[in-house]
Length: 255
Image (cartoon, rainbow, N blue to C red; front, side, top):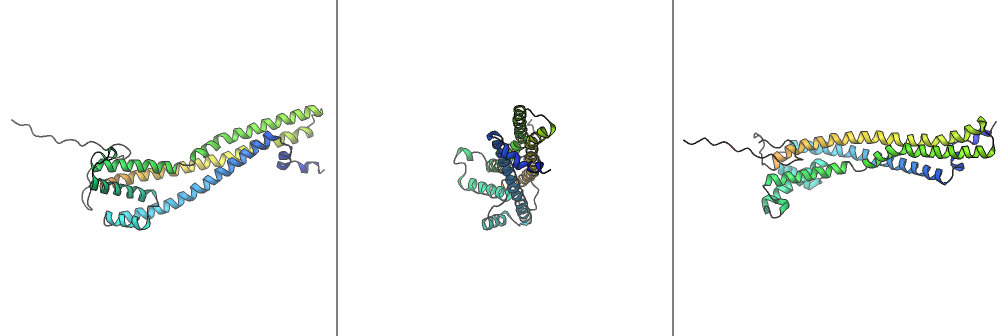
């Protein structure tokens, strides 16, 4: 009556060979890494959102870029928007002071600021995507690792049954059921990783879109020196590309 009480995950681990235990350790490591990334990225996302909203509120309510620069110098650039603003203003000031002294500084101040903004946008995008590759890998491979463990366990269970000569249901159900635990473990590892990957990917896409839109406005203020209250000159719609070339005005034809 108590013969089945010993069957379970502990019994399965005890009966597994080196391959089974290695696969189980791999699944446990995948689970720990994926949950650690989800917790870290999720906490970072919440903190980054709060700091970004605070800086954007300060930026749009500031009376000048000098006030924004003073705030960044006092509290530092701790979010993507302040980081982008700091680099853009530094690029404009550097070009105004030293001009085009190197190849990377060639062109007008507007072009130099545009390249700086593009570089910072790429850096922020890479920073947001750190760790997502591991989540995608875990979500894609964990079910197959569990399936391989199931196949390996069923194989050894069938070999043991063949050697003992007893193929009754009570002899088959226990070993095969324990082997199927590996499939369940693989799914338990993969499902949170896939859901977390999709959540973080969407959150990062929203953040990058907001950062791109802010870069358009920032380029207008910093590179073009547009004063408050004046009509903004047309600027490129996408700061990830090169600035649009100016269209020359047509001169009246001479007689």
